[in-house]
Image (cartoon, rainbow, N blue to C red; front, side, top):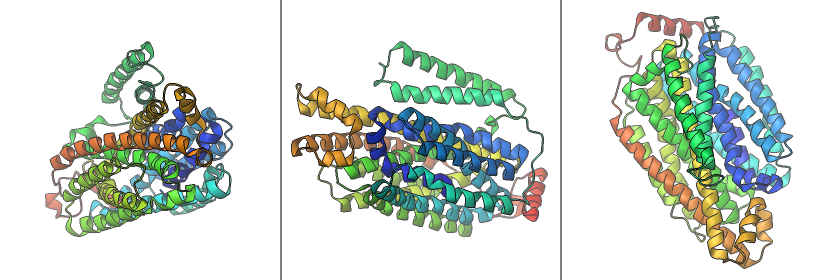
Length: 501
């Protein structure tokens, strides 16, 4: 989990420098979107492979793919290569994230899983704290390419530990019947949808043949995906898990958490470095209030669930806090202090900590044990899909608002030059500009970030409806067996897995 999360956080502070080196403001979102989109598509596939082939071999394979992608990212010579190799990284990262949660679900009963998930989810804020710091230090003192190469030593440790410690896990059925048709259709409609949100209104008009064609492809591929999944012997994403009300609601909240979390992490360093004048290292350090708050509530929430078995209040409180934090970020101006920004981060972090591990626990508790890998994959898929669409949509909003603000404030004569200069703007170059030009760009960044957080807050507020609709269902293993409707096969599977490990 540390390996998967650390990479995304390391890259965030380096993005302004990477874009200035390789060029292309319009590709800002794709450096993150390529990674998240690939992990989104791969997540349910890895979950199903784990069910069929066993957790150990699939988990180790995902680590190896992730490391290969890291090396190639560091060797990228242009934005197209970087985006492509980030996608390869994402394929491996999808297996890392779903593999961790599926292994945990296989060896720990739901009654005890809350505190284990609390610790596991605390790794996320730890990565989010350490990642920006490491990424900022690398950007300031080394070459940004080391933001990818730094994964190698940690990856070797992860490979070694996983090889030995997962040896006693069940090997799976050994009959891999992969739903390749469903996987291809899943990839098609998600990719087409992300392209619509990225290109619509920027690269192409919303009513252009390209966008309308992508919309038709999205709808057709999605409907075909539903039909195929209903008939497949081993569907890549069992639609039956969505029949459970709590699973669907938890999945909805996971989508919203991904939308808000990745959006905030991706665009906040833009404001910190360009407007507040922070270095890449300091912009990582300034994220600490959000990460520490998230880590504290994640750990406390896990302990609370393990002791009481109650969890419904956490997603409600988390959604309210997350929406409030995002709304506060939307009020930032060019003169907003770092102290005020830190307080906003605390509010957002408290909300994220209440939601991240709780939504996964609710989703896993709503699925039978025989489908725990697929259910974990589906829940992680929804969170990653939220992140992918969130970064794509918010990235388009950011780029459009930034360019429009600069064009509007620069005046007709200088608008063209001012707008084109944003493509290769770096914090160092900005500091060398005259004060008037520097203020013009800073105002554009502020307007762009404000628009991003406004829309993210609206999406988060809509999630409160889903949180309020969640019903309390006792966790498996928390109450007496007679109160737990669980079939004999699931009980035997849980006992066998626990005894084996």
